[in-house]
Image (cartoon, rainbow, N blue to C red; front, side, top):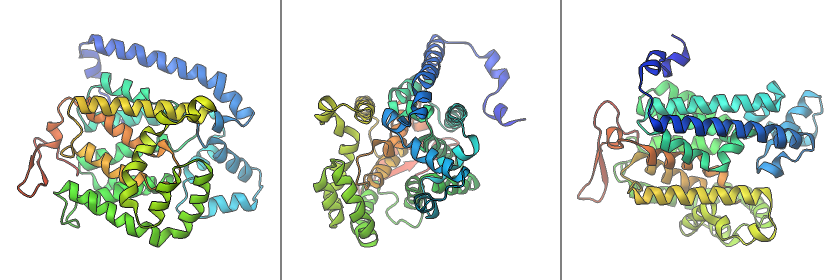
Length: 381
């Protein structure tokens, strides 16, 4: 049995009755794929030729392609060597992809393959409605730019799916492999996943007290980051300040006051462009993409709130909150860093029976959240 039949059983596909919502979803996805191919050939390909991909699609594609082209042509300039020599390094994965494929079209096909495999993994992990999940996921323009361009976000989706699968199915070897490759792609996401595993383990005496664990995480970051990374933070603060970031929040973070800055910084990334006058005065592709990114966050959070799904009793929401606290450390406003949180929110909304894998949550006399798993799937938190 090959990998494909492991996740897709042809017999079930042929005998399963076709519902109206499945036909509608198939039609929508077909139109979406056609639209992305049109955008690719009309916009992405020309942007590669005039080196405007980053500006047009709010990605870092040309950074990776320039590095790969330089290495391929033997141009080992100080910039190239300096960009690739350190570790951890968030340029390695997209750099290697372009070095091997050297084709924007092949990159898009690879992105689609990773996207489809990630969705199949999530389907093997959770019971959720594709008719709800897919439209919400595709609503965010970051999903589309991740499919069209060379980027790290599509790998983040893949590693997130592997992480969730490994935790729910208790596959420790898959978890280990996922953490290693996630480290090579975006070490921040690897750190989020690793610390989340630790937070739910015996190493954390507060593991059943989720609010207390989040507070402890904020306090740890409050003192650890400025102490260990003050020089790096100072350098990045200069860059962030020139990019019109809310400098006062970054200064708080650099001066051991992340406890005050964390919630505003999360809000800045998720909703900042909704109140940014530059969106209308000096419109750029970056602003437009992130404006609609923020709109999509407002929609999914509103839907989740209406459906009463925004609770730390649920592992997905707890994981999203955990990740948001860590992702908010970035001194630059970059909603792409929060894309994995958007996926978690969409999953939470689309779940058909959240209790089937989360279990019955109850508040203990100490105010903590205790979860008793039901069925074969246990909570991974």
